[in-house]
Image 1 (cartoon, rainbow, N blue to C red):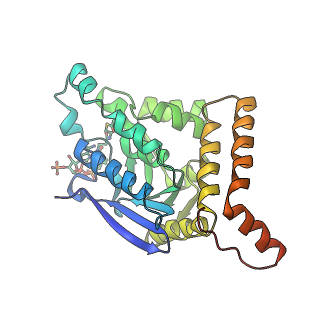
Image 2: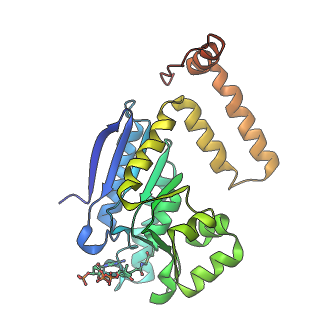
Length: 257
Ligand code: HXC
């Protein structure tokens, strides 16, 4: 059985990956995460793919890591399994990755959505880090990414109480990009991906890298990194095409070289 479904070309250059463990509310077991990581690695090397949309189903994006799989584990089991290596590999995915979230995005599910570059949510989406209720804390970035997105006091409240926020609160807090009716969250995410795939894929890659760098470094180094990426793009055909098209008053055609 496969834990993910890959829908190639849901729009030009856009691939959709659907998490497919509906009975367990898409709980993220190890096998699922390995499949997801492998699929992304493959899509990263596919020139026909310029952006990926990741969703669950209407009821759940993912209700967290698989509690049943983790329940009996010791610290050493967890250390040896080193599941976060997989998360680190997903974090390195170079192309734009958009989460289309409906229903529960909890614990590891919320962390997976936050690992994506943008989030389109349905009105029914619920976000939270309820690990505190089962005696642990977020382990895949929740204490860091939620805090960066929401600020200290809001993140602290969510992480210490385990309470959920709804889609509109998530929008107010700056956690998600857009909130739309449940029938539309996937198509809106694909539309957003399509806007991006019309751009130069090289520029997208280097822009993503530079934005992400801002979370990891100080302003001076971040600006330096941005500048290097900016200069680098002047060696691309896409830069020549983009600027010529502007001057010639036509639409650019970016080829990713
Ligand atoms: C394993 C899960 C699960 C999970 C739900 N299920 N969440 N199984 N791990 N995280 C299973 C249930 O056991 C149940 O299976 C089925 O999915 C449906 O769930 P219900 O609880 O019956 O549905 P409902 O009453 O609607 O409640 C939905 C829910 C609740 C509020 C989302 O399921 C819930 O609280 N789930 C756990 C959320 C959570 O604590 N997530 C954080 C996990 S820790 P059966 O077979 O009983 O019908 C984590 C750490 C991350 O994520 C670390 C990094 C990876």
